[in-house]
Length: 421
Image (tube, rainbow, N blue to C red; front, top):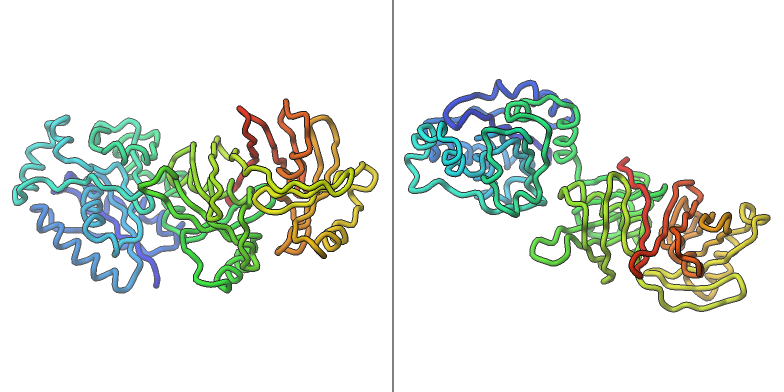
């Protein structure tokens, strides 16, 4: 089913029309490539307005996946429409919305006469206290004299995205950064990320079967498929699950965990996260700009194989061999992989120490059945044998994008840059 965006204009409920939003809507339509339906609506009273708009929503929902953009007082109307029709509306973006008209008129008395007239047919002004962070997105102006922050609940304030603009400056903005953020929310269900050259698609769509994973990984040309779900009433921020691009599952992928944490951070506007993998592994994440640091699983099932080779489980099984400089680049990694996997299913890595705190690493991964650009759990497995952990250790995988392992308060963390592709 195709998507459409229904646009609701501002105007203190009884004023304004859709033409005021044309410049912004034209840019959103051009960049998102989605049809925008600009609605003018009755303005005499709330009940009449709401009935008209709800009828329109139900009509368009038969033909489209409906997305809403509501500006200022139009944001209040969008909120009420979503509250009453959550299954008909995919997502809602609120630009400087008036979520609490009553609070607004208490703080700003000039709105009282207009709002008293508009809501005269209501016993009380309908509230907007609920919030779904997966579907609702609030954009506010830092310098907004019209919409006090007190109009929002504590929960809603957690997810606000602030812009250095005035009220009108945000509502009618044609700023490319703002337009880009709006379009990212409105566009596809899949986001593509790279962590150290390891690529993934991240989505809230749970795959029905193996073919769905394989087809989408092939279409986006990625190494793995990540599903997530926001946990609303839990101590966890979200839960997630990882599949290789051949449709097989893996208990852990540290590059994947950093990628999904980066995605959730941008989605929820939060920079400290606590989350759970489908295998039961718990992790924390700290995000600063494009650098993501996550806690790692505990080591288990260690087995020394020879003086320079060992096996260890770090959420997934790894075999690690330390080499000297002479044969690192030419070492037959695939041959080593097949030798080990005759009796033991494992990723394999070869590592060379360059300086006290820097290492080079190559990894051949099972299920991918190839040497990969980077593997976070491989770096963690290689870190196991390092006795001197006073300083962070810097690993350079084949992709040449650095992965850092460090010890903090007795816990091990892995960090790297993550980028959206």
